[in-house]
Length: 439
Ligand code: EPZ
Image 1: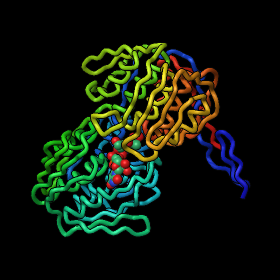
Image 2: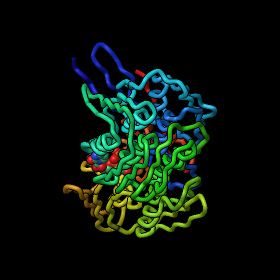
Image 3: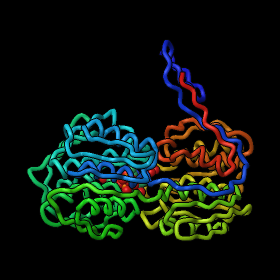
Image 4: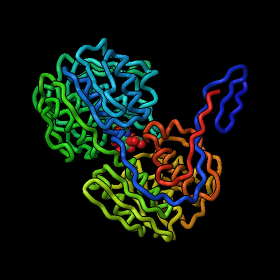
């Protein structure tokens, strides 16, 4: 069977499949105005499965309308969980009766966050059958810390046919030390430990804002979790969780993406509905590069600069510079005056986007975990493809300042994590549109 690949259409001889949407940007427009930040993807995809562990009805507000959230909801519905949107961003979750603890791979293989169903189902039902997660290709991305944590709580775990099967007579609190402050393992183990007899201590825990948000939601519905946001989280087991209402925190990664877009277009943008404290590492780096930044209770005002200075970025666990803004920042640094280095310390393979950014003119070299750019790059529009979620964001940022037209394929990656991004960028003055073609 011969496959002909066109920029936005994939034909299989004798048949046709739905085309991939693509984005067209006419660059060099200065971004100006205000942009409202949506709920945090990585908090939402943890809070949804946590609601499944509740014996009551939960109302979750400020959910972003993004594919990963809709995917998690579809997986929950497949287990009989009643999920109804009260409005575009408010979901009512009723998991009082579900029809099983087995998830279908077709519903989980595109998302990394599907692993959270392990902790939620093991905790509440002492049984879970969850396919291995998918998500962005950033390297191996094992889940050994998660499984070691579940075993420490007393679960048995077998893996067959790509499915992780967990079961336990009962869960008993334990001291669990994480080899690295894994976000997913911290939240997943926390979700199971909520139902363990006695006290669980997670040491070397992740401190990201969405870890705190997941713990705050669980406490809102009856869990007893202390220390979230520090490297030692103490969970005292409870027999069950009640219902409750909760509002998801604003997305620091979406906010940082718009801050960097303002900087690269020499723009003047107020990023609204955020928690400025969560942006400290990004704010510090943009100031180091010469941007003018002021902040208020729930907003940050970014004014770009036509002569951005170079700087060095080293990604790290929170509160360090977030790996999820590394591709976007590297793109900005390609425009700065002078040589900059970007060191990726979280994932072993997070420079794949560079092959695409170079098609737009970036002069950047990768050597292991470090990329080096000599800066002063003049991006020119071309056809490129988003290889993962944040790689796609980097391409949009490059296209916004490129001369001429940039065509970005693989937009489905962006739809996983950025709500209405083309409308939000257009409201700031970008010349950006989505081309949909069902073939
Ligand atoms: C979460 O991924 C986020 N995803 C990622 O965001 C984010 O980049 C990452 O945390 C780091 O902040 C979600 O929350 C759904 P980790 P996760 O466990 O949980 C290794 C985005 O763009 N590790 O903190 O997978 C792992 O390989 C996405 O929004 C193990 O070795 O990240 C990595 O090198 C991308 N064994 C490091 O730890 C394990 O059992 C950190 O991973 C778990 C992790």
